[in-house]
Length: 219
Picture (cartoon, rainbow, N blue to C red):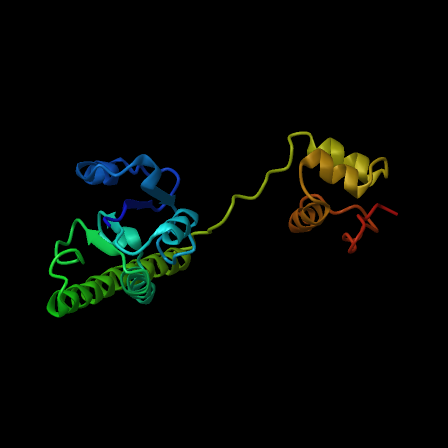
């Protein structure tokens, strides 16, 4: 009995377009319900669509994907999933960008050996490329930090009428919690920012930072 045919597509982010991979799979007339798309990183196989696909695969089914890195980028994990699909579930895999990664071709011992060997080489290469990319990113960040580049979100500015708010705080007309709300900060952030500008506008005399579980007020 001939099995079902499935297609698997992965892009790394929600913003990326899967059209190129969909076009590559069109000649195989895969039913829409059998197309599985993940918009997640390939660093592991903890992906909802892939998990659903794996549960549906049965003996004699065929899984088609455009390239091995669409399946995954982690060397050890790709090898493990390949074994699960081809050996445990007895399904076939066809990787379009690498004709030798096609378990429907030459199902004898030599064909299986060649597919497994090519898979290991390709997966290892994909892993090396990913590791090299991460290393370049880390080196770039380190170099930028050495030049004084500051990473992270830009600090929230004080509102334009902060001088007026601050004066009311000094006069004990407003609590710390009320001042923080007017500024759009948390109470802890308010104290950190006002301490940082102590030389310019000192924190109200006697004020203390927020305690755990409740917000501070001026004495």
